Amino acid sequence: MRHSFLTKRASSETHRTNNVSLLSVALHFYFDNKTIFPAKFGERWLLLIAHPDDETMFFGPTLLFLSSIGVQLHLLCITSGNSEGLGLIRRNELYSSASVYGIQPKHISFVDPDERRFPDGFHDWNITSLSALIYSYIRRLKPDGLITFDEWGISGHPNHKDSFKAILNLNTEGKLKELGIKTALALKSVAVLRKYIGAVDLFLNAFGMSDGNKFVTYSANPLRIYWAMLKHRSQLLWFRYLYMAMSRYIYVNNFVVII
Image 1 (cartoon, rainbow, N blue to C red):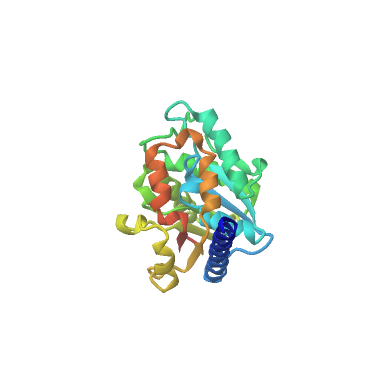
Image 2: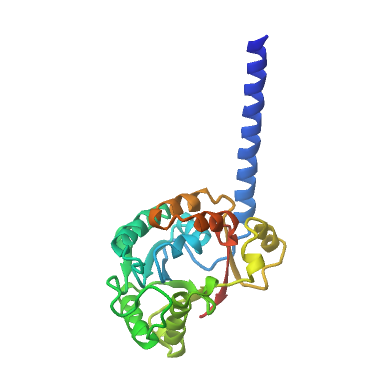
């Protein structure tokens, strides 16, 4: 009798697991087909961020999508995240996190790893100097596309906003086109209430509530993004766990066009 009960229970759990797996596959299929993004197989795309962990806190869905379609990903980080003296640790954490998205260590660079010119923190950076350094890097890399923050920087952090200003400055001077950049996109900031509705925003976007943004990427399965965030061990304070549980940027990215 006990054996029969255990068999039925095991069968029930297997059935439930299968249902969850089918739901996961269905979500992947549905949202993957909703993704609209201008990248193509074999292209080279650059993500410009301000700090180690920005790539996962904000851009995870896009990095997973680009990796899945065979785009060669490169990452340019302006600082080493050394505001608390952990710069070397955080650089190594970025290498580990980036590997989850298929980004090779040789494709990761830092604008100012010693933070002599662009310190991590609530400082205003010299946009002209920053733009010049980014220009030199892009000229060597020759990427097809570029991604960074928008003018509000998602969280309002001045380093995020200055990342955008540097790219905007290059575009205003006509240097992005000169460098052969086909597309430059800025990750759209949203209102605080929408920022923290998590997976609900998958459905708001899927059913036409994307604020008219032209390009959008989805991640119906955030587990790989969570795994990437765990690589940033030095940053795993309680509020980071709360952010990862509630942020819509773990599930969906909307972009506005710079060029």
